[in-house]
Amino acid sequence: MFKFGWITKFADTGLQIKECLKFYGVACVDSWRKAQAKNYQAVFKSSDKITKNDIAIQTWLRQGFIAIKSKA
Image (cartoon, rainbow, N blue to C red; front, side):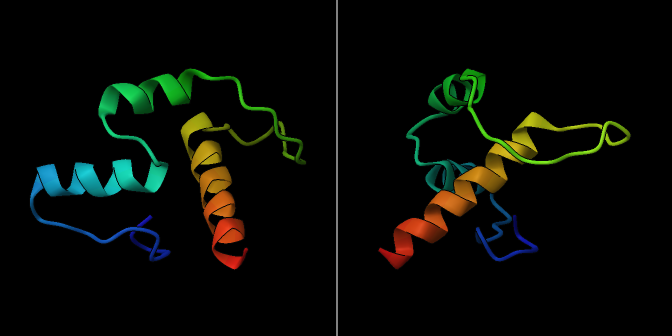
């Protein structure tokens, strides 16, 4: 997320958590966990040879939502 410039990197752990929560659009870690537990519906091609990471997929979906929202 830092690498792509989606969030700012902080040395302070508390500030970093707040930055991540802001990216996901939630107020607390518990809300983030509940959002991650939802079964999001997305259609895309993937390979069976690659291990899928649900959090990474949801992060890319969130970034897409943010990108679309910023253009509206």
